[in-house]
Image (cartoon, rainbow, N blue to C red; front, side, top):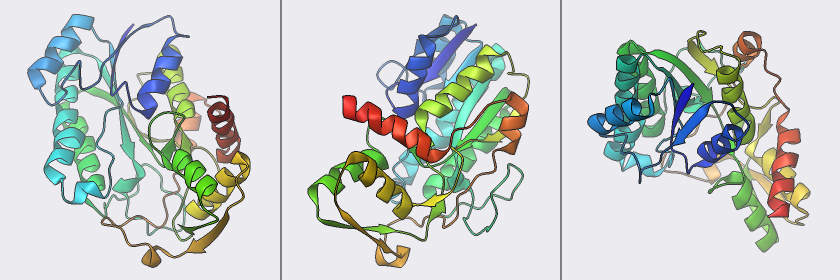
Length: 285
């Protein structure tokens, strides 16, 4: 099969490049410099050129706070561009694998969110990602939407790399403890996408949730990062109200992964085990 990947230079896109090297399928990787996904004609041309059977959309506007004042750009990338990919996929009879977010939920639950829970984004980022989901569903294309959360990797900028730096530089650090979820190692998400493609399970269309297993707060996550990095920094738990941000964050973002486990037969590592793997990779760099 021919697989077209967008957002190749991002965290997930880089991990998709890793899994592609182990695949018998033919992958084409694009980013903004080689494909403007906001241009429908350009998307159509690329899909036709590579004879895409699958499109994996790793591109996204992910600056949650900036989106509050940059809503037009966020909507263009998270919604309108996604609609372009869906339209092109439909026309080419290709399957679109699109990555969405836990931010489509309000974070008011006390039990893990499954795929059928009502959506209610708290800010612009979540609203534009939800609009992208709805565009995919309305397009008539074959699709697999995977909602994920707290993504990190050895690539780009993310919470793990920021905490490693700050806990090495500072004697103390404040981190919120009242926002709870599950980190997701981008390498694990890429492995799941590869499994879906390689095992020819693209017929199982629909919405799925994927993160690593377990539950933690940002505070717990930061403490684990500092400890594994060998940084002796006193991390203090604070409430969200003591660390105001432009965009509201969901207080509970735990995703129920039963559907993706049962449908595709994947084994999902615990968040701490995957964090150890990532920290070891960073230490070798």
